[in-house]
Image (tube, rainbow, N blue to C red):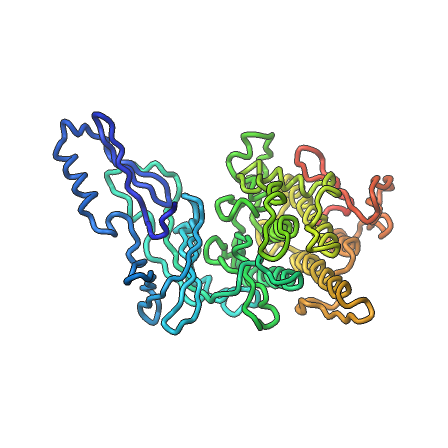
Length: 505
């Protein structure tokens, strides 16, 4: 079992002749000099006394987490109003020994107000958390952060005389306090709340992008349902922003994909492909090494959250293990996770993936539309990356609003479908849920593609609606052999991909 209040752990390894001390922390391993304790009895005595007589902090314990009687408390020593103590009521920690190591505490202040306190270990060279706090303050769809503390980093635990075997940069312990919200998104009360929370979180992600922040860690635990009576736009909120977010203000280039920034279960295919094991198992296109992590990767992660819940849950907060078993490879790193998601987005899976009966036909249609949308965008991005034509600067992306509008448009369509399902067509009056977009913000995909191609290639001949719907281009080729309401997407980079909608730039 992981100890949530440890900064590092000492391990003493002894043989019949020699002894060596090891230290493990969030950066990795450092080892001390091995010595013969028969010949160096003084060193051995000094080592044993040091381990037994050292105080809690010297042994690696975080002394800001402590007990008073039968209750546990946590101290936030860098709060701008002075040190505060919060009573801890429950804890949820990451099962991973390495990496960011999120520990999420449910706490109360002296007034009984419920709070969430997160301890994480992001890289020390990431953007200033204070600057991030300024950028995310006051945004709809984004959780409100009350305080942020950076106390120490792993380089402070390293001894000059020890051999550091870790190539990983130092990590800093970051403690964040924010308002408590109801639950993670998989504990929704009904289908409408689930869709509204998902849509609001996507809107929050769009608001972050507009402020120059990319989240990069979309997961079930980082999408929370707002409190009862939450105002419009905050039924769903994004948290976890200060852990792995990237600030790209001005002309700054986007960072490259890095599988260490998020949970492998919901990573996009290109982020999962950045794991070093990817090239060990299949022919590897080295152009993907220069793939930037952008908003499309996070939209793909939103889709995988939707899939995980709608295909793996029997209802609110009720996972169905037999259904979730088919997603077990999503938890693997590199090729395994990427290949499983590539299979989900391929045309061979049209009839193999069904949402749980609880969600019904409206969600089945939404799953199909989002799957096609994500597959088409992924095809476009992978082709452009291979040609070294994909943008590196956020200012060079021309269709950000279109992509968010399409994604949210499908959710709005599903919300209308749920209203029709419950109330009937005659009694339903639907107003766009995501009001920041124009009234007709979700036109047919063929229309969006045609308008994009006109902007990118004003002098080229554009395909007609009939040809696009049939999977044809203006070259006069015969339609693809599948339903006109479906589109074919081959996202395997080992075969030439098929783009029935043309190349989007």
